[in-house]
Image 1 (spheres, rainbow, N blue to C red):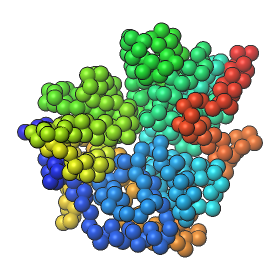
Image 2: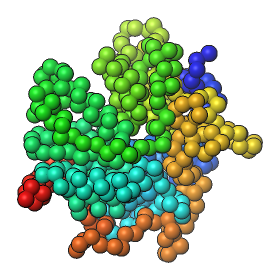
Image 3: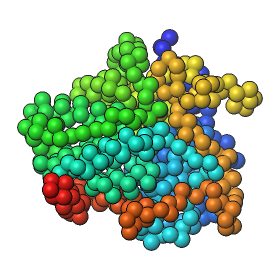
Image 4: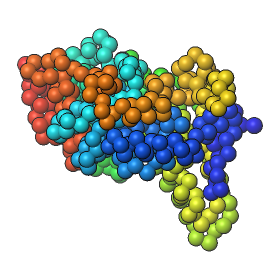
Length: 481
């Protein structure tokens, strides 16, 4: 018996191995009546939904099954842009299924584009927090930003998993651009390409910062062609030159990824030597190093949730799309990120497995203890992911689910949609946090939206915006004087 639970996908269906996997698989085929109910409420309210990959399996299963055109599930990079497109396409409201910084980002992007009239709702009246976002509001991070502000030619690359207040305060001190795990490597390399003598200050995610440094260090040991393949403006020498000027915050972590540590890695190495290893950039160094080694060998990937999804899909297509070969093949993937990701993986692979000429069996391995579930006593839902302590993590190592993301429930979503058409002030507690204070002449919402806007322009052009580079140069002269 394998030490970790897993979900096995075939063209004919799926099979769960272990209680945790059973809890994840229970909602892959949702109740049709619930799907119809969601569709009716969305049509009546005219609302759009943007959701993160880390939503629980019940909620994601229903969202994937619903044919309403304004539903999108992704990583945080795309959520705000898709919400804006929904506004342009006529959505009368946007419901954000995620943590609070995600709804704040959506609100800021809509406002900046002239869609202030489109309400944005969360599905909880109470705050939906994030341990990483909280770390960026601590005094230690403020001190880190002040040090950056005193260093000439500095750029602050802030992980988008932070509050609008954090982004605004940072921008007031040092030129700031947001990033996600999907684009952070290119953001850092492009910053050094456009400001070769500059300093890049990344935060608040400590593991991601450490992993970025490890990745940059490994690039410095590669041949120039390999480095240029990642970024054409760099070679091994330029990477070595920038390393002393890359800084990362050392006191911030996400509780979801925190427990993918040495014990999990040991068990993966011992029992899954032939598996493809995937790892989010936020996982601790041991898991990152294992996945990075696998990636170099063509047997794994490190990156964002979208990178992981794309990699798994590409590998399945590669081995299965072989005309004339009908011999069955099995692929095994270790899922080094939040377990909610599996619903999107299943959704994407189901259709693919039906069309491949070669029979492919795909096993998704959850590196958590098989006992990482709680008995609820409910007849219809006897098991839910997460240990009784409530953090969603297994004491044996590895994380099951994010407790903050799981504050978004299907029942809460349906209730908000019932009330949305004639909400008035009734849903005020469900709106993103309002920041009324100012920093200088600008509101926190205005100032906090600027780093997001810089990232959106970078995503389009692959260049740091000219205004951001000018800001770096200008403040650099002030810091030097």
